[in-house]
Amino acid sequence: MENKSKTAYLELLRIIACFFVIVNHTNSGIFLSHNPEDKTWWVSITYFFVCKVAVPVFLMISGALLLGRTDDFRKYVSRILRIVIVIVVFSFVYYVRSMYRSGLPVDIIEFFKLIYQRHITNAYWYLYLYLGILLVLPLFQTLSVHMRKWEFQILLLVSVVGMGALPVVVRYLPGAACSYMFTEPFLSVYVGVFFLGYYLTHYVELKKSYAVISAVVFVGMTALEVLLTYREYYIRPEDFLFLEERTYLNVTLASAALFYLVRYLGSEIRQEKFWSVVTFMGGCSFGIYLFSDMFVDIYEQFYNDLSMHVHDLVAVVVYELLIFFTGMLITMVLKKIPYLKKLV
Image 1: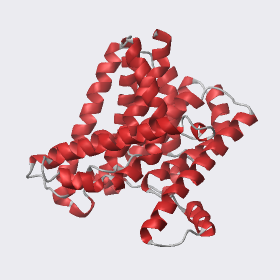
Image 2 (image 1 turned 45 degrees about the vertical axis):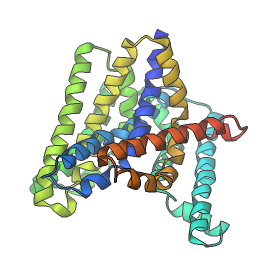
Image 3 (image 1 turned 180 degrees about the vertical axis):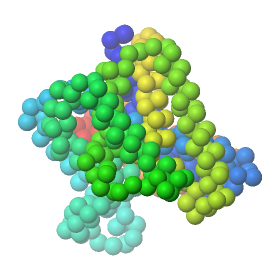
């Protein structure tokens, strides 16, 4: 089981990130309807920032799995086709549902124009980002195979740290703004985070002291985000959620800390039943993600009714768990159907 846990921790990270995505799409209404004079605001905004690590964690998982090797052309094409088919098929489900609810006819040509120009539902922007990464994956794989440790560190320093820190620094020190041409040669933060997953998996050894540091960083970054957001609430109320941007260093640092912490736990937890459950649920995480926005909408009225009888925070957690487990049940069914099981 020890060998399995070395990779099963990635499934645990998938489960965490998948649930966090749902939180990102459901929790904000609570703190937006309260203010810092209310304890509910503080709990909700903390919950919000804890879960902002979802997208960077997903990218790091992909980097850990896809980099450090070179795949053949058939594998390359297969990955791209799968995501393209997923975008078309599941976007069409959302599109048909939207047209039915609006009383409008389904127009196939308009549908393809729509999904070419933008994502059809809130969560699906990530599919387009991932598709872009897959298109240039052979180049990234070749780089990762031949890069030395210090070259990885330079890439991470300029793309994750530099590009991620600059907007935050400029926010508080406007005079620190530099020519936009300076950062043009850098790889994007998203690409940097993709490489960060591979780096943390293959170049950072497992140590208890590092895990403790990771826990401190995660808690510290979250606390800093909450406190600065409290300050922003009174200084710039029209833009007080400035620090939520997933490419900013505060979010990527917290994401890297969580990634390492779960990786360390993966080496310490040896219970076979635990990892069997984790592996099963992790295998459903993509399907849960694909259906999450639909169930956010379907269960919204349930949440509204429930919040009239219990505290908003209790209601929203029940709402989120319901979305997660309904998505898992649907995914379990689809995994029994030929062809569809390969998509979810």
